[in-house]
Image (tube, rainbow, N blue to C red; front, side, top):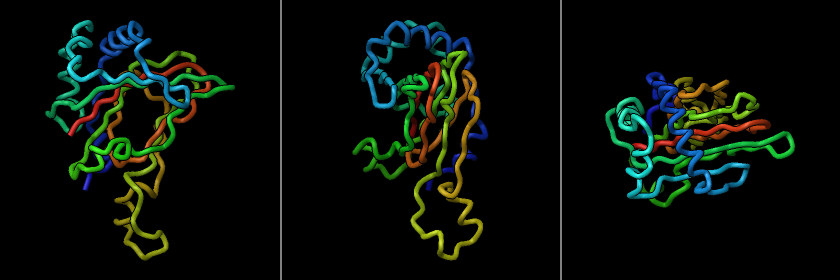
Length: 201
């Protein structure tokens, strides 16, 4: 059983804006290394064994790494992987990341019994950005018919019965969910957003 989205995010801490600016500057230097994805989206995974090479060019990188360890759920646990997602678009060709569950992106995650937790931190968003809202569509698909008699507590414990749209995320703001949480990013119809993605567990 994974912890609920609401409980996880009660203690979410902002990443200092100066650190976000330093990371964004570093990403602008290596943007050619990003991989194109559908939906006007680019991603960059820090390659295995090259974390030191990435972080050593960022001022106060140890403070960022400490934040990732101590201020992201589960607390006090070192991260597994870090990657970055860039979404950009226009009215004619909007950018987005459709609703999905991270567990089904990897055979390794499918085989795990313990949950993985993912934290997204807004590193940059352009002043003219329109759209790009973060959407939570539940903590997993329900295994019971909604027509079957269930207690109110059972209904409330399964977030597939509700939709959460996180409005106007600020630079440095973090959101954490588990690998079965249904989530995505609504259409970016103007401007650009960059997030840092951290997996732990």
